Length: 334
Ligand code: SF4
Image (cartoon, rainbow, N blue to C red; front, side, top):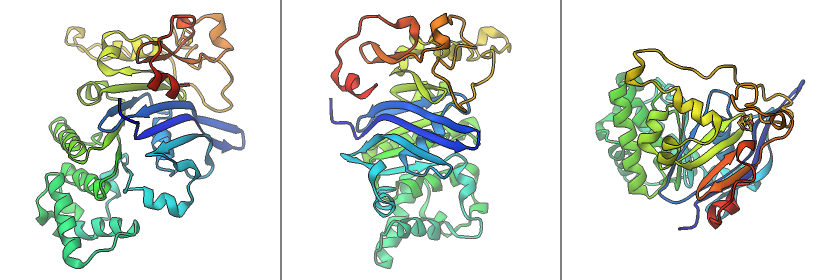
């Protein structure tokens, strides 16, 4: 297996409030190989978007990366200065944020928005070179170069999202984070945008982290899936194996709640509410909703363990299950 392009080790990100710390990301570890596609799923408040912001070093006060390492292509970005980090963004890691298409400046033509993005990362070229770069990145995302002369209000939702993807990939990053990249688009455009992201990823040889809660989209797009709950990874493994046999009770309920044709329109949700992460005590934060909860679950945090090759689960039900030696994963997931 090739060297991971990204290695996240025991990452903790807290938001400090007057009532105490909100542990939005609480001991997350995973690795990402070049060209790989990893999905991060979970309910609102599970920590997945905070995770994305942490990878970009864009956590704002009162949030803070408390501890852990984010090794991107050999360097720990947690320890970089703001100036060093600015050159890493777009060059090595880039994000298409949630609602990205609404972040475009409505009174600025697309060309200037792409050029401004490049200049903000200290990329200076001659005018013809810059023009070529703008045309190239628009073509990468299946847009005609004439779009460079247009204002965002002249574009459809799908075209605006493609412009945002063009800005994100304009420097050929090694890791692309896509945070709910298709949430405001209709199903046909969603599919086209995901195909574009997939093709661009392959052409760049980049890895992708797809963040969202649409399990159907995940199974179509990613190779590996990390299911987040309460700021932690509940289950991590091959996406098809997880769908075939989900092991963590939360993953089981998540997959059971997917609509099926036979259900005749009756949807099954997951009972109960997402946990508060404020002053979260040691326990399994899912115990109030879990059909298999035991006494130990109320007071002891279940460790994330590799309970079979390439499958990590954090649940007391599996404690003592034989573990397997899969060095790359074993060493990367705490
Ligand atoms: Fe359920 Fe306990 Fe497993 Fe948590 S640790 S998912 S409460 S069985």
